[in-house]
Length: 304
Image 1: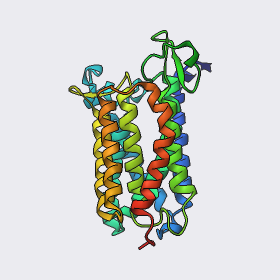
Image 2 (image 1 turned 120 degrees about the horizontal axis):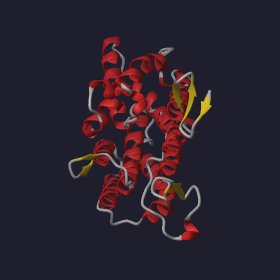
Image 3 (image 1 turned 180 degrees about the vertical axis):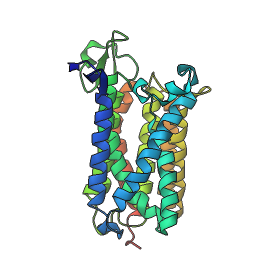
Image 4 (image 1 turned 90 degrees about the horizontal axis):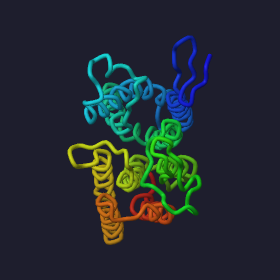
């Protein structure tokens, strides 16, 4: 048995800490989702059924997404199938896992939006935990922090391979995802996050907004041509949720202003016109405004 910075080697087989962290996040997501089945009117063990279909397909999707955007890193099919080489992308996992769950939902004649309400806030928890694997793998970091007085965690993280301090974007995404989970799971009342679609649209809105910002600051993004792939998907997710919320809004003008503000900030981030420090200073304010806006747009009605 031998400990390395990234893995535990047992009889020649490496158990990677990143994989263990992801597994812990997935298990906790299923546990917490199971505790909310009754509140959403779902049958017992729905969370487990979703996990059994979504997790394996999600793993395939996460790998396929990464491989398609980095074909030069893989010389053979065996390289593609060897997950120990690293390379998973969360959006691929969410998209393919959701499609697999959708098929099972149609077979069982359940309402998919309710399944998504159950799963996505807990997926945010799994993402928040899984992001700590990026610290071990030295990934998901931002631009170099040159000011010596800003070189401390969690504002920055030291990356040995570059020999410099960088913005600790993985930590901020982790914190944001945990906030999404806490808001949608821990704090619901009779008027909040029980209406069909509330958990789904809140996740897409808030995670899409956060990821579109963070991805614009990352120095190790996955690219689709000249475009940051995950930022593009984030903007699409944000836009989809915003349009649906606009349709249900009691205050359309407020909704339009909120969506325009999100779009402007996302574009500025994509064009690298916002300094890294902006994210740290504004993220708590943006999250609070997002919650207030979401409540005004969607959560004031009694559940259907």
